[in-house]
Length: 266
Image (cartoon, rainbow, N blue to C red; front, side):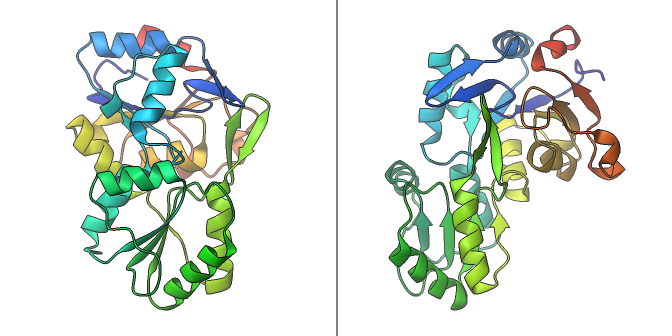
């Protein structure tokens, strides 16, 4: 696949650019060089992670500390794309957040109206720090009262250095879906809200982008939703996946063992 004609690039984080071992990040071979070569070409890139336990700029700082040259505004998460969803669907009521204090502070800083109780327009499940059953019950009653159930991600896990890391946000969202019968709306990967956020950041239509990641259900699905070219890297959670068993419409355009294989194409 040619990459020299792409208008921009979208990368996943865990399993693609880094591996996470506890609180330590280890940069994947070639990742720093790939980002540097794209930057030198004058083309933009964005890094989209479904992680929501920290503010986007905190994620970016962590990647810089690990050795990746990433600016704060190049790091995107559902904490940004939830606003795109709310605006597109004209949901102007308050939002009940299930998440960390860091995510709460960020959303308040960017102007989201956060409330907790009856009458909210949406429940947004980010990454919770702990299980608060009283909060869950208030959220469930709000959903039964008509609030939309939004989640940053509904994927069960993401890639860690020692195997899958289970998604607390997905666990919490599943609990609310079970007791309310509501179908959760993903505002992270893959979603139209995420695509809009990416397109706005890169200044290019999504069908001119290349999406690179390790997860068929999130990264490849995101790219296909936007008409982008997709590359699956086997350095993460899909390393042992047999693509012959995947429906043709869900397969990536290309598969590589790791991002280092992209260097000669940029």
